[in-house]
Image (tube, rainbow, N blue to C red; front, side, top):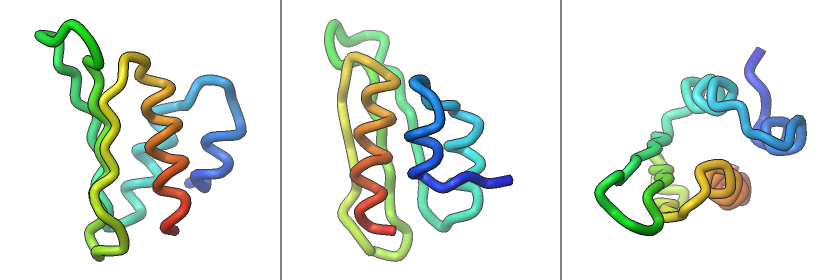
Length: 80
């Protein structure tokens, strides 16, 4: 069963990446997690690209992966 973004964000303290990927597999949007290990700070880059031009690209460069995913999904939730 594919969960909504709201349920993904509220079900657990830690966001389950499998649930996030399952959700995005049912959309036309793109969800990317990039790890820039060469950087000293803000090594994670969370990117969501809307395929139907509903919003500009959502992009967070951040230290904490879970915090970045939550911020990006929270912003994405405004457009769905």
